[in-house]
Length: 335
Ligand code: TXA
Ligand code: MG
Picture 1 (spheres, rainbow, N blue to C red):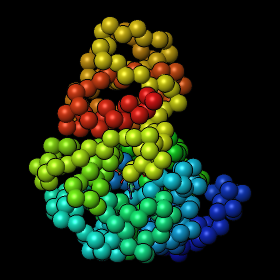
Picture 2: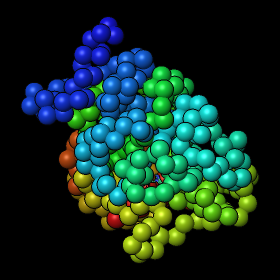
Picture 3: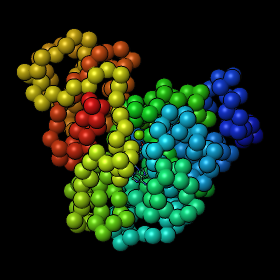
Picture 4: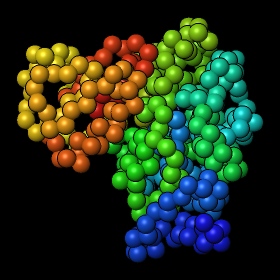
């Protein structure tokens, strides 16, 4: 695409009301250079990572970050993760890199891990939802890192879905939720993992898991000891505010089934799981492994909504490895 053209359309970033009046469709591109140009001009861009697609803005641009909350209809008390393309960028977000953080960075960056550190004063409070900490992640997907490097700044990015909906694992899913609401989508492959990063608070004496995700409990234990698992209290100020909101849900009701052979199923429903039930479903997906189940689950939820199904039954799996994150997402979707 011609670069002058890109700069011209990226100026819509400065006039969101014009975008709404004329229903400006979101620009699709396979060029990380073109996508980064939107970020540099104050726009918001959906981009691929190995976990799920993110919706990015320059971490130091308050107006751009506001647009993310507006486009996603995200509650303002839910903090964003800052994504980096190079390790040196951590220094622009935090000057308090704890020993735990260093170990986790050495072991898992780049990769599907987010570390939470004390933020410096340059990181705006709108990005961290008023917290004095910042989540930092360096994606493993090469296209993501290339895009982030070209942005020339850390990029805050929640998952690129409307708030509460299943996270998008393809650029088409990001477009389904956000077309016309955001400036650009960088079209990559379908996400390799399909579930979000593991979030670990590294500010205290011991690391604390705030959200289990693609890096498993055992992987963390192989690098740091004495890991605490966050237990949700009905506290007014939870440590990971995102956890208290409705999440990952299709419009259909989600029901977890432990024994598909004996469950009583309703019609107009779907099933996903490892073991084939005897009952017939409008849509059914039997996966060969827990990894494949994790990879497919969010797209399956979306597919059920496209068919306007009423109920999605999800076979339970053992909470080993990625199974822990998968069961966490399914339970939250079922809440
Ligand atoms: O894999 C991922 O993490 C994806 C891709 C795009 O990187 N991103 C993602 O972002 O899932 P989001 O916004 O959907 O979820 C971020 C989670 C939320 O539960 C939020 O509360 C938590 O991380 N979080 C972010 N910053 C935090 C902080 N400073 N303290 C505690 N929790 C934080
Ligand atoms: Mg999300």
